[in-house]
View 1: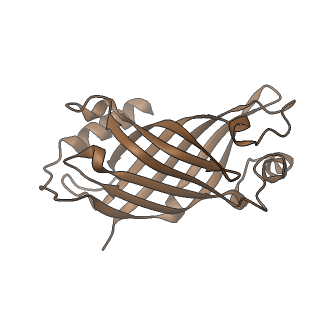
View 2: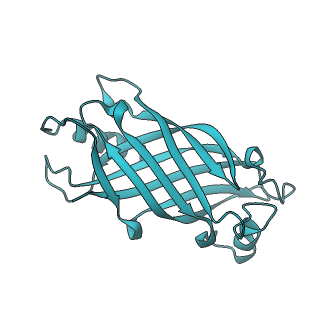
View 3: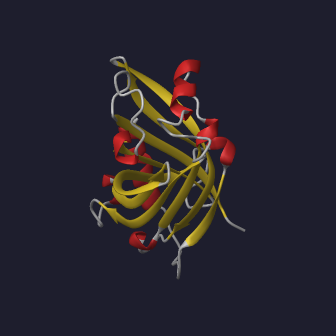
Length: 195
């Protein structure tokens, strides 16, 4: 999967891109976007998802650092594949979905690992808010054209943001005897150019 993302990210960079004076805005395709997460329960890795409900994305194809990402996730729509784990996830001692129904990530800086070769991926510094607690995080990022689009067509894009967070940093430390502190994130969002 990583090799595929690197390939399609490299293909994006080879597109004939018209000069852009400012970042281009994109609208979220909600039904095709989600935050995946991997958690360790009693020593076994499990996967869950949360729907992305809002995303403000602006991409500057000439000055990638001028791009921005602001993504909000619906905690109440979280699913883990295990009903008891889903209910525990939403409980007051973990994500406290009743009082904090949204998780938000706002970028503060975006940079390519290699400005001359963006196929090497990039990093996004940002502020992650969980349970009303905001902390700085750095996540890995990749951007590419959606499958089925023609060369030069930047109207539909996909991006992936991945990384790890410690839930205890946000006060989500409930069930620590069963669930590991480190959570892996895998945000997949599909967007279309704003009209």
